[in-house]
Image (tube, rainbow, N blue to C red; front, side):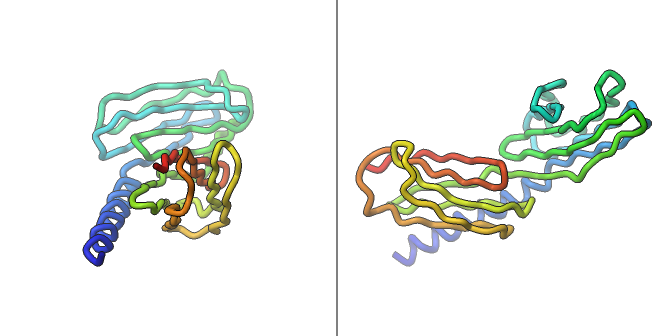
Length: 196
């Protein structure tokens, strides 16, 4: 039993270290040149594709590009002169990492907000135990919800801490399909579980 606990702890530690390292891989810099143009630089040291999206405040996508030059720095001068004044979001996705920058375009200037990074949580289910690990970079309120057939059977508020490590003992549950949902702010992450 001690060996199993050591192996489980080692797995969690390695996954946590890899997650921390991966989070530093993706960076978005946006430098306004004038009221209509901005230089966007995206750096990633991972060897994965980048999906780059710009959307308006209603979620309508106004720009999308998949960059397959893995490991290289992506740099582009964007001309926003055709955009209406308003709030927009630049989102870059690389593997399980998402980086976002909100910016406001007006006739006088482009104002760039802070970068927000989101990493997909790590879920695992083994020997009746459900584990969830999540790095809450944005320090948002988090909550776990557990469903069976779309019916809520358990919920737990887990606060705004940086490092979420939760384990739920599911060994007493009936056989069937379940689903755990982690909410972090407005983000939602879902993990299906089959108990046999």
